[in-house]
Length: 312
Image (cartoon, rainbow, N blue to C red; front, side):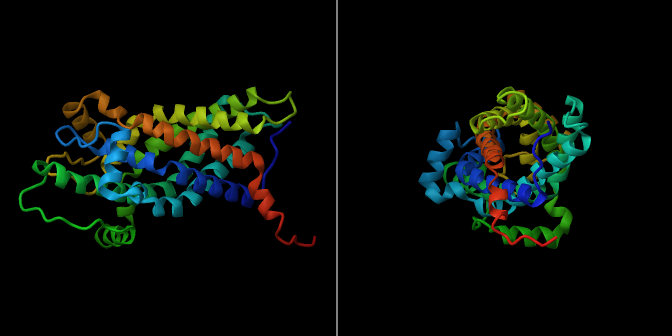
């Protein structure tokens, strides 16, 4: 039997609600991930995720942990909606009599990951600047040796200020800096995540015909999400470094993906590619677990049921 067909509007609503709930829950961990990934040898301000969050609260207050959250909350709805809806669309067209091979599952995931970067790249670009601003400000206070002589302390920019600056200086391409690295991260992530989730979820189905219980969908989403997140973390580190516009005076700058890989290997060693891996797993696991539960519960369908139906 084929999986139940869900209308596109319902898929978009489900993806959007799941993204909003998930981001609200895990955003502080995502902030810690960005700051841990961006700090380089010689300018290490944080030793771990907990150390990062504690220092953030001390220097910026509780809401400092949600720096950049507005951008994410605004754009995560279309991003998650596009990703989940695109995967369902490709799976539907690649399946035959309700059945789909592993290779076609991976192709569907590839298509979903490619589609989502339209929204993901500018969202991540803005979010990273806002999240990392606090790290650079704390560096100036606690590690003055990393600040260039005569550097003027600047106020943390807003998302609109960054957007206007990028559009003025580089046009729309400025918002898509790091597009290649984002594709290298999101396409493999989706290739791993969607087939792994589908197969784990199938293991918990009640017989051949029945759906899996919601807790199985949640656990499957968490396991598949964390596995895919750790697998692509090296590319996530590269993407974060490439998209950061402001750096300390002792930190490297990069001209592209290969230059970034070369400098990280030379100056920080292979272990640098795993920076923030457990933070990313802690972010992605509940994010996709929640998404699958929202789909399972049919929140989008429930909301749409209140709209007046057109007469045929």
